[in-house]
Image 1 (spheres, rainbow, N blue to C red):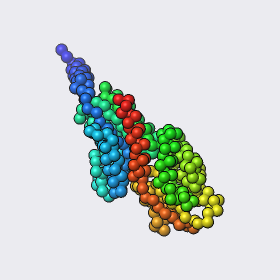
Image 2 (image 1 turned 60 degrees about the horizontal axis):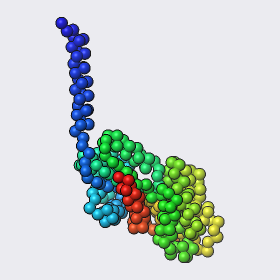
Image 3 (image 1 turned 135 degrees about the vertical axis):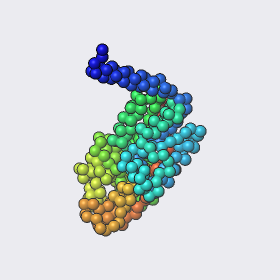
Image 4 (image 1 turned 30 degrees about the vertical axis):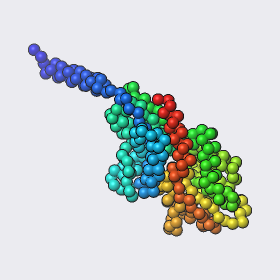
Length: 313
């Protein structure tokens, strides 16, 4: 005769066996597809102008990788949550997916080879998170091949190439001797040093290039903050106090509009934008409101990294 205890133990064992079989069945059901696809990954934005930048990058990628499926994913949970609630100015024109969600959908849709391109500027925390997501996906979807293209400022060759592009884009300022101030995001990650490397490379071409950040290691030290840059400007002895500011970011989003170019006159001194602080210091400010993704030559560098990733599949 079975006791109540024996009955419970028997049922528990059966439940465990059923669960184990179900998991095995799930693994057996997964089949690696035979399609090749591309996933472009960026931070994202709730602003309207960046959507045009994303469309430009999308069209460029489709022209270079003709016939291949191209999808998008966004690494900022905060931005995605806002967009999913309809809080963006224009909303994203593509699927509002995280890289994890996008990879799941692509494997389910039969993609067995996936080339990912990071549209981040430096290999910082966002890129590290993307790499971790890729490792998890390879474990979950056994047999699916995934490779990733590096961010924009990855190697010394990348930094030199970007510096040459920017020197051409700001050729008028270079010719006139006007300082050019580029605002990057910055990060506590050790690869914040990439901004310093770009600053040094730009100065080889034109000494009045200045790279600063909104936050990050350089910002904390003060050398890469707008206050630090204004101090450097004061030592130049300029005849005309004209400067150009522009974002060193993939898009013209929140930081470019608010931290760099805001002209409210209402913020506290420590919260003032680059424009406000420069004007207060006596400078006439010209703003070039273009993201790196608005330059074909910069997109070509990102897509060359994607081509390298595809070649590994």
